[in-house]
Length: 128
Length: 128
DNA sequence: TATTGTTATACTCTATAACTATA
DNA sequence: TATAGTTATAGAGTATAACAATA
View 1 (tube, rainbow over the protein chains, first blue to last red):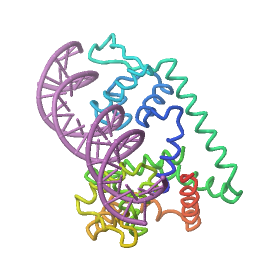
View 2 (view 1 turned 90 degrees about the vertical axis):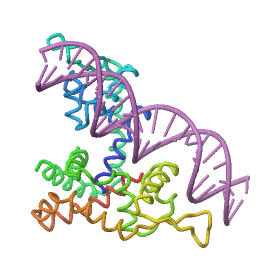
View 3 (view 1 turned 180 degrees about the horizontal axis):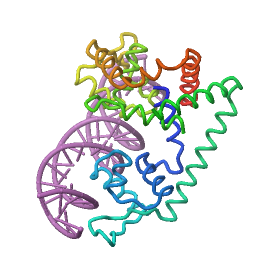
């Protein structure tokens, strides 16, 4: 439960309050790994195609991504992040890092050590 | 990053037919810390009162919690988990933590102690 | 015939604003 | 007048089922 709550708190540190977590997750994927088709995004986020379609619709209407029909397979649609989308992702990352830095600075050395050791265990555990 | 990864790993092990995360979070709180008023639950989960009211409605209709008017302050409503709710929490936890139990059992006592201490810090930090 | 994306429909979670009952 | 809870309303994320376009 502590993991879920901290994860939620970290996600709340975003550049735009109006941008939801699912939308940001898609934007971060496109920013870091290039254009994806709708099906690829749905598989990556473990949601259905209609669900991802709706999320992409919101991102497209807001100008964060663009849809382009695939030239080789015209059933597919390539979704690509815009310059405005890249700027938004960068701003969110900076804000999140700032919040984390303040929190860490307020902890005792022992607490920081505990979190550091725990993070290592959590990474190892999550990889199983 | 460790928090995000562990959170995602835990969710991926979640039973398909189990309840939603917000509902489970409320039920787990009531199961572990006794009855709460609506406002207390809303503050704890960092959502608005109307949002929590709807979640509690779903839990109440399903028979997992009960509403009881407070005797001292009749504006308040005490929300309490039912026996069926306790049973459901137990089932959900067992299913979600099936793999985690094995992982934790493989850790050293010192590692388990580190995770326990880290969980407390994470809860405090997430509440800011 | 199979795959990819979309639309239709329904449910939950979320919020703000307005309302009721009580302090 | 202030507070606790509820209702009204709206937007987003989720799903399944059905459909269109393309391979």
